Amino acid sequence: MPLFIFSRFTNTTHNTTTPHLLPPPPPPSSTPNSTTPPPGTDPKTNVQSKDVTINATTGAAASLYLPPRRHKASSSPSSSTSTAAPSASAPPFNPPTTTTSTPSLAAANVVVVSVHYRLAPEAPIPTCYDDSWEVVKWADLGAVFFAGDSAAGNIAHNMRGGVGGAESGGDGAAPPYFGNEQKDELVAYLYPTYEGPTNLMIHSTMDPKISNLGCPRVLIFVSEKDFLRDRGCAYHDALTKSGWKGKVDIVQFAGEDHVFHLFAPTKDNSFCS
Image (cartoon, rainbow, N blue to C red; front, side, top):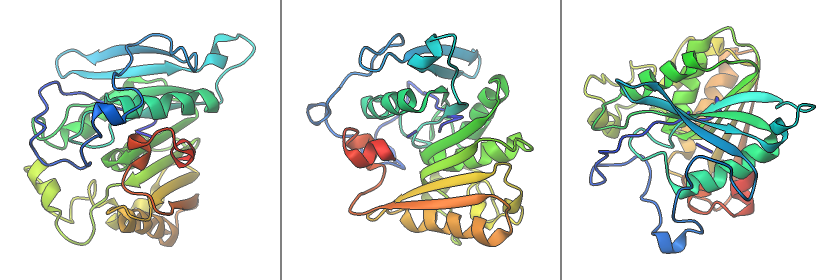
């Protein structure tokens, strides 16, 4: 899935010729739905959606998704979440993301706040963190889950740290983009003031305070062929060895590549992820 308190932002001037954290999306002909549906009620899942502007000056905004069972007074969602874009430089509004997310939230019966943050390099990092945090503060957070794939997995982790004391819900990352022991050249291109491994937002697995993560459980997804697989495993190891009191699980998808669920959203593995 994309950043779920269960968060995502948009930049209409995004330059598709610049380096991406994600491979390019498949051509429309290979995608079941090549047009992202507008806000409203999804006819297949009965999920209702609405776009909300949080800050007209910065463009910080969110898409709200309401599961079908919330329509009945006798039943309420079991949790409240928010989402982010799959990457700090890739557009969040795309058919694969919508196709994957809508059935999942309908089945989970959760309210989703999908964060729309401005994209790098036009809006350099840490803009994506600032925009996401603005939406997190705006949202009415109860039992909350943060989740995201690729760079959004990193943002989800950092948003959880900002909330602090929210000892309910959990975090999900599929797969998270964290820096390792070396300076990340792609991040350096997108983040002009990035200094390397001492930046603990990017290199969160090296944070001595990672044991203070304010949730009781974390679920990490990695894929066998993903170039970020080792970084997702390092995140698991960092939490495990830190003395963090929560429970962390990791699931690996054999034979799959980076964010495969966005490019093949109808696969069984995609729905599970």
